[in-house]
Amino acid sequence: MRKTGIEYPSKGEMHFVDIGNPPEPGPNEVLIETEYSGITNGTERHALLGEHVWKGYFPSRHGYQHVGIIRSVGKDVQDLDEGDPVFYGHYVGHRGWNMQDMSAENHLVARLPPELDRGSLALLGVAGVAMRGVRRTRVERGHKVWVAGAGLIGQFATQSARAFGAEVTVSEPIPSRLTRARELGADRVLNPHEEGFEESLVEGGPYDRIIDTSGYGGLLDDIWRLRLLPHGGVIGLVAVRSETKFFWPMLHPTEGSIEVSCHFGLDDIRLLLDLIGKGTIGIDSLVSHREPIDNAPAIYRILRDSPTELLGVVFDWA
Image (tube, one colour):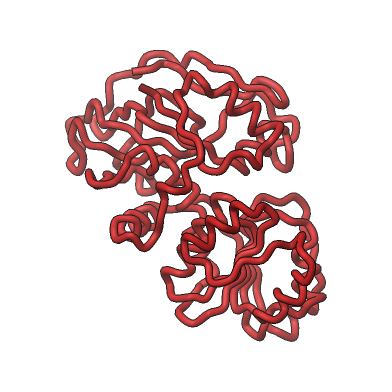
């Protein structure tokens, strides 16, 4: 069991830290040895660079996607046994081990089905963020949905909306991500850098639900200017933002609304595991890099300097 974690000591830098040996679990606790952890690309890059709410916040530790094995259980734990594979979704940063009180109502420990690839399931956290956003915007069968951005969260938001029966348009400037979105079920894909983008976007609208996973600053202005939101429409702001302004008539005559979501719940993770198991949502093909944890410094340099080279990044802690 590794006794290390990942920390950002200063802007743009990461290093390993010693987190010590785990204590013995209390009566309601479980000890989880990390097998895999996944990078949360947007959140971790913003934090690495000290952007948005993380401005000047160093040293710091970030990340919320671990897959591991239960190594020890407290005497009062009833639902988990030693040797069980689990997903652990608390925001603690990348760590070689974690301890969780299973009596806490908001715990984020989910047993994993044996037939699924555990490495890929280290991306369940960002998938959970996407699922939470789709559920909070109340996507339903027959809705027209526009997902802005096809990074990891956008890819999972697209698949989640499709799973609920929506027709999904995806916009993204990186062609390979558009191709992946199409392969995973997007009905229409549009590149905002190509001629005729706005005309095509308007042609496919208006959109009952608009889900932003890009953080593009002009998005709300574009929604108003192009009249993309119908009566009763909902905008879901999933991507991290700082101060955000919008033109009031975008929502007033349409009686539209803006939703935000934060993190995910155990119900989101369990729903995703069911849909992944049935083949409704794909996760394996979104892993672009699977690296030994010792290679983390090189990966974080790419995240800092060339983030579009990364999609799903999984660290192997063996």
